[in-house]
Image (cartoon, rainbow, N blue to C red; front, side):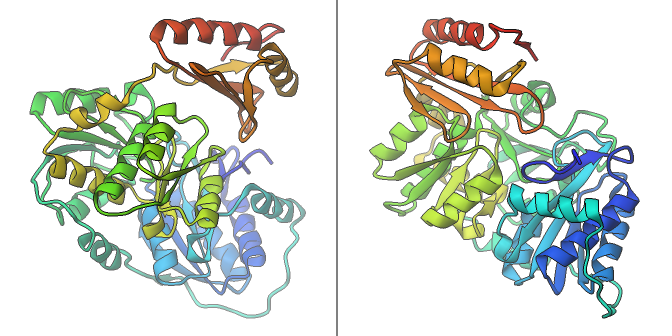
Length: 447
């Protein structure tokens, strides 16, 4: 069943994910998680109601009490599960995918992530209709407003006083319903962009990683003289920043700024989890400030598990997920934003003045190649760079003193994703072409 991914359940509605399947997923979740009370939130896609009703009916069939918090972001769902001590929770969302998709993101008590092996156990139960019979009856879904507790959490963590002007692009997704009220707690002057909820996403897909989806945000930041721009994804667990000149800040450097901001507010000797694609400058700078660095596979389930194991203070991914011990080792775009704004205020510097000196190494960006065999290609690449240092945290990382690359497989397709970095642009371009030639040597091609 292809809708069961490495980190969540996601598919086209109704072709791949429909009411009947949502009901079975609800039964499987109720049976497998052993929860008495299950917290459920949704984004604002057109299919939200039909999937929510079917999923909730499946939970109740298994004797599980459903508590609905309505339309929220994924971080608010995680926060509410952990703070109010629910047994488990689910966000009905397809994150940054186009409007015709939807899906389910699960968490357990204390907002602990649900890894791939547990999702596959759910899949097995759904496919086999393998559920325990539960005679107990439960009442209709309860309703809970999560915003008073969440906004009190935010209010206590606002650590800057400057009324920065910010442009916020909600992408016509669910965050537009409440992000303005959340940020009204702060001194910020907010210029809203695409706050009107529209499940067709008429202005751009809710994926802030793609350049075309931040074009208007970057233009608006410059034209309005704003201090920075904020792009949120479809369920609000990713944030990408744009500086005052309209330049895009990568997620690995944002993670670095967050960690440095925590150092500047008095935290010492803590661990930071980064994904294996992060620029070398991240690890170099963090270690220079006396911090330890743990590298992780790409994906929130892996990073959260490592952060819990290491008791890391923060972590982040190239894709714009930022994690905090303070938010139960889950994503918090609000804490990420507050930390960076406090750094700007303390240094009396703009965002560009802070991050640009750190962007030392030219990067290729992520380049996809479709290959005949992922395993054979990785073996061929390893053989072609035998004098390098290797790591296999996620795919294959090949390191030399002045350049390095990571080549990792897609979770769902015969694709390899290349990220390469070097000490100069000329070297980056030369090595990029050299590596791609090896990757695509036997039937591989650009994807």
